Image 1 (cartoon, rainbow, N blue to C red):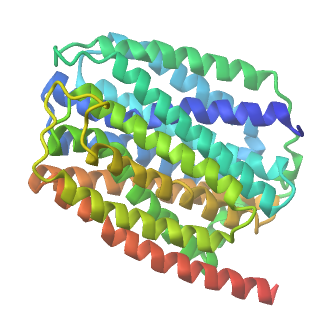
Image 2 (image 1 turned 30 degrees about the horizontal axis):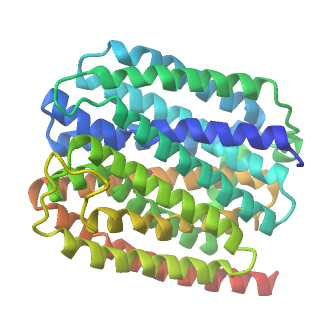
Image 3 (image 1 turned 135 degrees about the horizontal axis):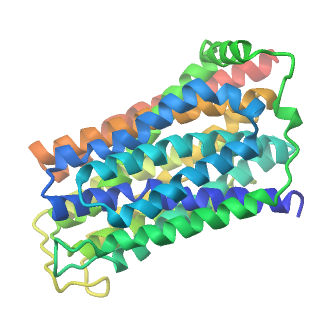
Length: 411
């Protein structure tokens, strides 16, 4: 396989950060149990992760090709590996703020460089979309396994147990392995650079991208999608704990089921995009997601699973709710790939920076809105509210497709 070493490195980097980024849902649940933190206060952890992603991506994305894509990824892995070594010795909520701040800064470095690197190792739109979907599929496998393994470290009988923090030793080891593999992988980064441009010119070129109508609509689409996605991914454990009274361990495992559904959806999209137009696939996915919200939430009313329930005897709503991951999964990598593959390779880092910025902002807003609605209303209202951004996303994607067709005709 062409570029096998580079692709393996990108897969592993995404796998490590999948676990770290999406552990926020588990951490939100556990800090409520360990430190008596309220839901609205716990929800700010999403901001400590996503706001640094947005800031670092905005100011550094256009500069990373000159610093070095490979070196940027190595720096990100080194930062989180070190922080994970510290976590088992922590005993206060502010450590988790620092953890997710570090994860956010590091992931900004990783995601921008990964997206820019994909353009270097793929030859056309079809190959770009297929690899992007498979990479995002590996990301969701990381989310799935992270939730499953994390749940094994949680003591349902003792809410104050801090044994779950030992899992960060595992994450530190994975970061080290990813760092070493990347160190021994070669990558030709020259197409991503324009040596004659100054850092100021690179930054201005990134800002000019925002003025393009196609990019504006794309950014709105990304923002709305991540707002929806993070509201589900972050708050699924709390949904199971509060709405259907599932045990804490099963609630965390539900996040793994959702991640598994995302993985299936993204791998399936990688195959489907060879035969189905991207716009058709995305519209079907949005409508499917909305339908499952309308089906699953009424079924959750009055359900009380109790502490003795398992996945073998749970009611059907316990399985239906995470299935929306199958429909949500293909949307993000598909629209990202469509816009990136339409740009020259030297613009991929800047465009990736904009993707990461607005993804982070959407993720933070989605989690905070859901957390506050959970706290002051109820869980059903919080997830019914997701139908609003789903409707707006459908409109944005329709407009995005029209603008892309128009630009193709003009080109």
